Image 1 (cartoon, rainbow, N blue to C red):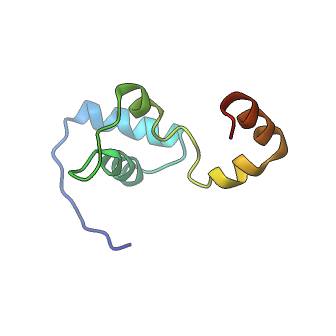
Image 2 (image 1 turned 90 degrees about the horizontal axis):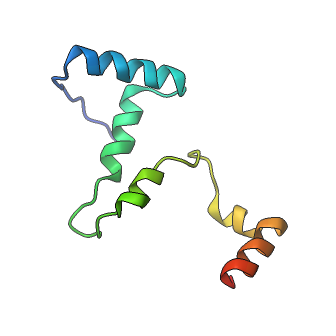
Length: 84
């Protein structure tokens, strides 16, 4: 993935708060902003509902949804609850 350098003007208190947040969550400010900006709807997708938007980023990046679905315990739960 290619990257572009970006200069932003953000008030000092917000930058300080963001730096505390990324330090506490083991990420970087660049990654946090990239994930947020990537989650914004574009012209080809319907915007997320507020409830779904709040869930963005909850799962770790390395989460494999198919692996989760195939795990016996989860498979039984998904089948019982949703018929999957």
